[in-house]
Amino acid sequence: MTTQRHSALFPWFLVSFGFLALALAFSARATLSLVMPLWEVELGWSRSYVSSVGAAALIVMAIIAPLAGRLVDRHGPRAALSVGLLALALGSFMVAGTSNRIVFLLGFGLVSAVGFGIVATHVVSTAVARVFERNRGLAIGAATSGATAGQFVIVPLIAAVLAFAGWRWSFVGLGLASMFLVPVLWRLLAGVRVTSSAAADETVHPSLLSDMAGLLKRPAFHALFWSFLLCGYTTTGVIETHFLPYASFCGFAPLPSATAYGLLSAVNMVGMIAAGWLTDRMNRPLLLAIIYVLRAFTFILLMNIGANLELLILFATLFGAVDYATVPVTASLAASHLGIRVMGLAMGMISAGHSIGGAAGAFLGGYVFDLTAAYDWVWSSSLVLAGLAGVIVLLIPDRRTGIPAEAPA
Image (cartoon, rainbow, N blue to C red; front, side, top):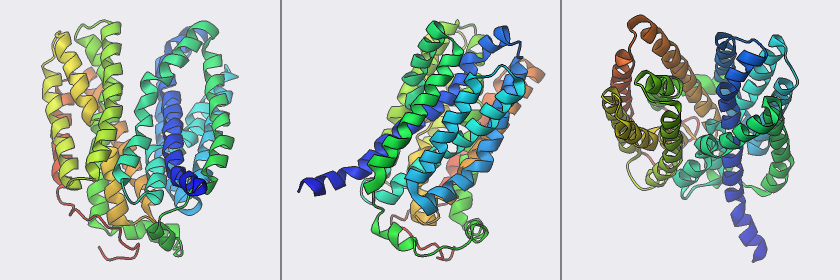
């Protein structure tokens, strides 16, 4: 009886460690902007140089994402997350121990970026989907909410270390935490068993190119890919990159701006879990469309904030509720429409699209502001594209059961 009860908890161990791993990885990514002013003073590195290293990391992440998905498809979450956490640890130690531009580029823009690309929401959501059949949406939402939890839990701890011990110890702490998780994860996830449908799929092993070609033939994949690319533009691209500069542009001081962004991150976690819960209980394409349309309307509010702090807080609350809420719904649709066997690869390719959209939003947001000295076109384009994403996902039929990997489109 005790053994059966313990075995029943194994999938939730995976949810817990997925949450922790994502919180750590996303906090490490956020540390770049946190430490940037110190590097500017202490090492003489320009913001454009540090930003270019961050952009290089995004490119590496886009390349790694499908490969990371394939890794979890073939070898499971223990191997994938362990490799990602070790890469994150090594990259953090490289950054902590250098004052050299090239070593920093290799440490953060390449080695850590490999870790970011593997310890990512698509890997965790795939791993969770493989061990849950009931309450799959809720489990995915809970696990992947770690991506935003780190923004208001771990990042303040990093900031405290930064203030009392210096930026090098912040990265040392990230490296040690990543290394500590590996043996614990390896031991506790040894008993995780995949679902019966996932186990049946594991008997088939086509080549990587064959699976990619098969996915590209499926209308559901294209609907999820292009909607998630637009999702990246309207979240990672314009909000994560330009929200704080826009708040400053509107006349808000750093403290209320940071408070609003912290609130956005806190609500974000709740929104992901709520979306996961709803994923198990309602029409998923409709739910995803509602999330995108609600996000579109938040940009109308953002364009009219002016110097009103209450509106800034209201926007942060509403946008936070629909920010990463697309992740559990998109992952659930990928599992049922594209198949558990190739879900990691599919979500990796879809996440690569998200990174491309994010890069486009970040670049075009800065370019348009330099050109017009305003953010109106940035928010207007985001409104239209979020609405378009909502229309695209309505083309997907809602189907709860998984399909074989070789099923026709």
